[in-house]
Length: 222
Image (spheres, one colour):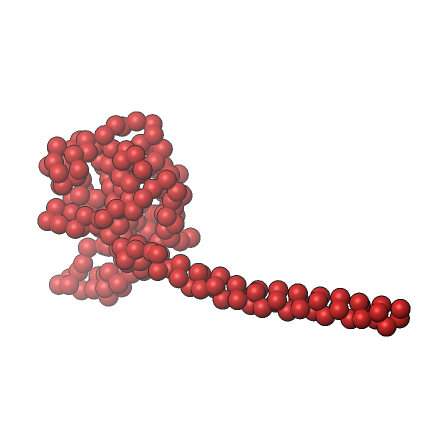
């Protein structure tokens, strides 16, 4: 009986050891697959978003893709040239982005500001001309409403200054026959400029809620 009991215990120990070895082998095979998935994830980012993130980083801007949107091709033609674009799933709201750094422009401005023959415009005011130019192009030279963006709103973007332009648009394919556009031009002193164009067919509360959400997924670094 003692020998039989010993054999049973030995078989049980051997079985348990084999189970543990199989489990460890399986886990060692799973981990590389999980790691591979994490390595492949960045490849899912489109070239447009990758380039936009590079430009945003250069301008000290943080961007996180928001839920409820899908990426679309940014316009790049004789009328408009933007870096990135998105729309809501129901095509009720579309937004274009253009981001640029002011760092080199600011350095050049400081270098030349005491030379009367080589003076440059202050790059911190460049957002005004850029925003108005886009608004006038959208509206065929007629801008409906121009406003200085409130300090409370600028704080959400970590921005120094900004202007908004609300325009009624003509019926044309270049802007996908949208009726209205709201242009937002914001800047952070010496750092960068962000231009955003928001499109809609209805100036509804939902449209302005989508506009207010922008600062949740795009802003200058503190």
